[in-house]
Structure formats: structure tokens, C-alpha cells
Length: 200
Length: 217
Image (tube, rainbow over all chains, first blue to last red; front, top):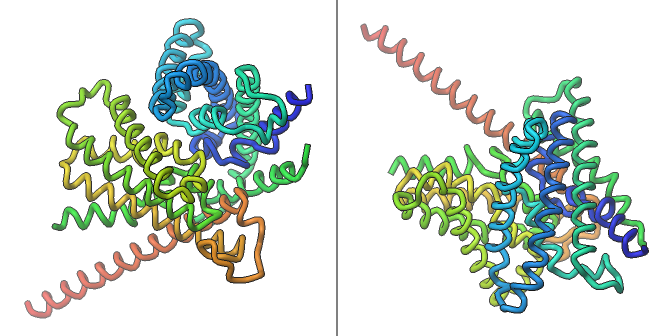
């Protein structure tokens, strides 16, 4: 139970993907103009992150490590993620056209999202700082990626709320667009930075 | 020659991948707290981008259009794997400081973006020049921001302690966002001002020429 709480706190607050690791900034800046689209993107990323971990972690531990082909991890992982996203898009299109209408446009973008490749690379690396004495297994890996995705969604939603309010104010011409969004993100990061001072 | 000058200027200034197009933001924000690692990241991307541009433009007639993106990704992922092995063996300091961002060069939008927008339409030499120009634009932008962040945030430059005074916030991701945002704004402001100045000068010259022509007539 202790490990579970440590993983959840680390993934959502202290090691949040956007505010502490700066993974997945492209969708964070690009798709955060409206809360509905930010939430859709966040959920889509979470889904792909969990599925990618479910596939890549066993393949790495049970196929690539025994065969001593760890150096091929980048090529393997990016291909698994790309085909997974393509497959997911087709399945959602067939099963639920409504969901596809809400989420479908974000799915192709996710292939080149650092957050997905980032989480798979992170999980096969050294995670002892978060896990403590417990050893890494597929269960913890999936829980970590699920909550990292939820943390990503949380920051996306906070950011989109702030950007919707920002539309009511006049900004200087040079600052409008990306620069003001980044200054806004700076304040979110500062708020989240406080969590990293907590030691569990 | 004029063509190469235009490609170089576009990559370095007018379509600078970091400041004008805001691409490849993840490694930028993650690494600019240290000038050494941000410059190392820039140079790694420069090499990978140039090689991928050369290979993709050489193979542009062979790769079928429908499956071009997976083909590009395989080429880029192979190059990144090579770069990672090279850095691990020969520059272990840089390898450690880049951490996870080294593998994430595969999904860096600049490399795939240049492949899609330039290398699959142009010859090998133009693509090589474009790769070097864009890579240099990225490296310069990252180094400038890395120096600012490290100097103000840690009081050091390239790991060398210079002053006691420091604003610790600038060495965290929050400071990276702030410095990046302000740098984009300043860059855009300067480029806009320069363009306006050039337009005014050109107009003035045209008007003078017209007056001279009238007087002569």
C-alpha cells in the first residue's frame, strides 16, 4: 500500500510529466486553448500511455533482455507505439463513432508525443527513487503510467482554464500566442514545484 | 548560391525552429537549466538532423508515399541509436546529463518536420545545408537560453562558478518556461522591428528613385 501511495504521489504531483519532467509539451501548448479539447487530449494520452506500457514493458523484460538486444529499444518502442495508435484509432472508429469524433483527431498526434515514449523509456530505467524497496514489475509499471497520464490530464485542464480566462485580457503583440502561454505555464510549474519539496 | 543563402537564413533566423516555429520544446525546456547539456543536445540534434536529411533526400524516389512516415521514423530511430551508443562510449558526461531526452530525439518534431517539409522534395546538397542550418538555429537558441538560465539560476557558466548571487527558480522547469517565453517574445520583437525598418528603407529608396526619374524627365 505504501508503494502504491508513493507511486501515485510521485506520478501526479512531485514528478508530474509536464511540470517536473517537461515531457509532452507540444500537446500541452498546442491543444490547451479549450478545456474540452484539453481534457480529450489528456484522456487519449493516458489511454495510449497505459496500453504502450502494457505492451512494451513485457516485451523488454521477457524478450529483449534475454536476447541481449536492449540497444534496439528505441526502434522497437517507437514502432510498437505507432502501430498501437493506428490500431486504437481503427478500433475506436468501428466501436464508437461518437468517441471517435471527440478523440479521433488527437490520436494520430500522439505517436510523436514525448510523454508516451518517455514513460516507456523511464519505466525500463532505474525507478528505485520512487519504488523504494519494492521491485519493479508490470503491475507497478502500469499503475505508474496510468497516474502519470492522469497527472498530465490534470495540468492540461488547469492550463486550458487559465488560457480561456487569458482571452479576456489584452497582451502586447510580441507576447501574444506561445510566449504568454509559456509565462502562464511558468506559474503552474511554480505551484507544482512546491510538491517536490515534500519528502515521502 | 542565393538559394543556399536563403535556406541558411530561413533555418537560422526567419524560420528558426525554436523561436519562430516553437518545435522541439520538450528537450529545450528540460535541459536549458544547464548550458553544457543544452549545447550538447543542440549539437546531437544537429548531427542527427543533417544525417537524416541527407539519407531521406537520397531515398526520396525509393520510399513509397503512403508509408513514408514509418520509413522516416525507422531512419531517425536508427540514427538516434547510433548517437546514443557514440555518446555513451566517448562523451559519458553528456550522456548522463541528457538522460531520457537522448532517446526522445526520435520524437523531436524538428527532425520529422524537416524530413516532411524539406528533405522529401529537395536534393541531397540542399537538404544537407537545410539540416545544418536548422540544427545550428536550434543549437544557438538552446545555448543562448542555457547560458541565461544557468547564469541567473545557478550563478555559473558551463559548470564554472562565477557569482554568489542566484535566483534558484530559474534553474527549475518553471524558470525554463519563463525564460523560453520571454526569449521568444524578444526574438519576434527584434525580427518584426528589423523587417519594418527594411520595408521603410526600401519604400524611401523607391520614392527617391521615382523623384529623381521625374526630375530627369
